[in-house]
Image (cartoon, rainbow, N blue to C red):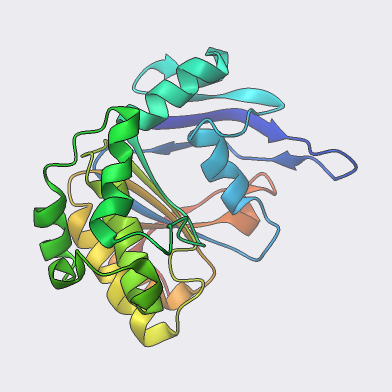
Length: 221
């Protein structure tokens, strides 16, 4: 369970972002929907411990992450959080497997990589260099790298931002499937993808002091 309480983030020379209190339940998937600049990616980075809040707290399974040192946050993220970046963060000259196995430098066991790649439909690309893959395939590699360490929490920052809708939809379906049983929080601006998530959160409302978690089957998409 992830609890957001009295959270604010102030960047230099910018208006502070104030988040409504919210709880992300374990094992559920959430889509954070909202316009650019409403604080979606910032919230993910605070939950991941990449950014520190100006005030307030992030509590994960009863532990206040905001009180931990940066070293402790980094250690927790490496062990428990899978982060999927919008720009993939892959090394183009390396193969798919090498991009995953680089996690071994952080002490991550990558033995499940072939199984994860198979679930994502790209096992046949395991020895291909990243530069030879399509955008959709690259995003699936980024997902595999996040999933392979079997994290409790998966954070995805605009995982379809660089893809057309048809490919993006397939990527989201694959992401939700391989994240089953985990807490998945994904940022997107495309409301059409909401039907694949358990809940939808309108970040435009969340940062204005009102938050409504809408079960996706009830959302008017």
